[in-house]
Image (cartoon, rainbow, N blue to C red; front, top):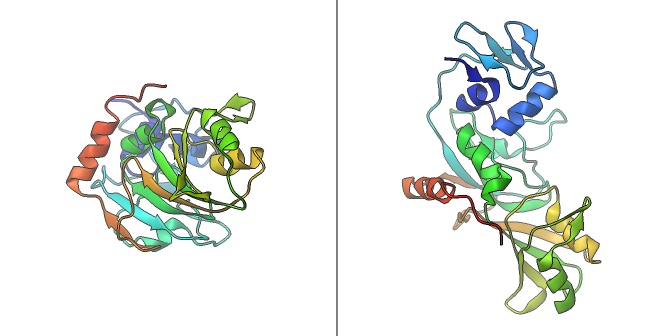
Amino acid sequence: MPIRINKYLADRGIASRRAIDALIIQRRVTVNGSVLDQPGYQVKPPDVVAVDGKRVTRPVPHRRYIVLNKPLNCITTSSDARGRSTVLDYIDIGERVFPIGRLDKQTTGVLLLTNDGELANTLMHPRYSVEKIYRAYLDKPFTKKDRHCFESGIMLDHKKTASCGARYYQGNKRDIIVTLHEGRNRQIHRMFQSLGYSVLRLDRTSYAGLTAGVLQRGEWRELTVNEINGIKQLILTPRQSA
């Protein structure tokens, strides 16, 4: 039965559907030797599909679900043409996995990786508003007035951010716990910057309810069956907007 190209590749652990659409736009996917320019292409059994010149022949892989405590100064990609350290340099397994979403090079903390393209696509979809918790260290005390503005929403790229949570960590007004249900590019840095603050350090402490626990920077572990089921249960019902 024909299957859409992004689902076909996601099911084989190449990347999330969204990332695969980007690969198609970058002309890195071929079908039967021809560069694919149709993201909606339906793959049929005789088709020969390749990514970056490498034929995709593997069957649907054994599903892997991993949490990494991302260290400083590594990038959240599967590879880097400039030879920089990536999150995959810290994970030694047989299967190919890819990160769910991104953390900036300078941002540390909880990052999920998997070869389950369907789950990755769902977790990153705005409809599901997956909760992300960060700890931000600011260059100066965060006033109550600015905190209220921050929580109510900030205009970024001509669109207001969704309401979010911001609280002082143990009463320290430069140490802020931020709870988001969306994920725009460098969102926390840009929100604080719009109010006149610089984020000196940023650490993600939780994603979809998962934390790094006892993992040190650069360490990783497999998710438990209960954790995997918990994530899948979480996304069965999309979060209702406030």
